Length: 157
Image (cartoon, rainbow, N blue to C red):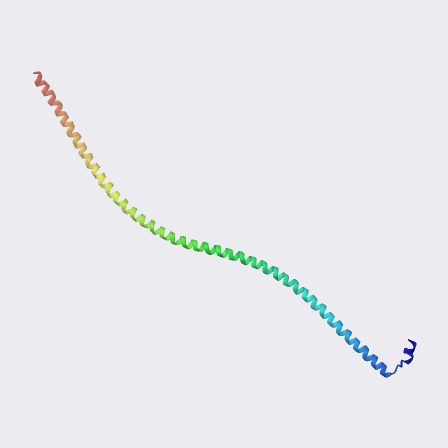
């Protein structure tokens, strides 16, 4: 080893080469440090992006679940809306039928009222005839009783 250092001459060319070597080594080291720093920075950004993506995936899952619930609600509400519109039509038909029945009932009621008035008049006339017949019966009965007494008097005499 002493031999290597004995032949070793420290001249200007050596110092220039040594300076270039150190400069290139320093540059390479700086480039490596910069790239390692950038790699670490990008790795941190990538980790943050992964966390953000995971949060977004979780949020998307929640939103998809919510969307599915809303779709189900929408389907139910559409069915109810169809049911309501069908019932509205049925209700209109039922209202029309009720109006028709009310008209028929009104007509029939009027007919019954007229018939009841006629029956009342007939009843009143029958009452008058009954009273006349009752009076007539009473007079005839009285005449009968008198004739009976007269016949009895005649048959006794």
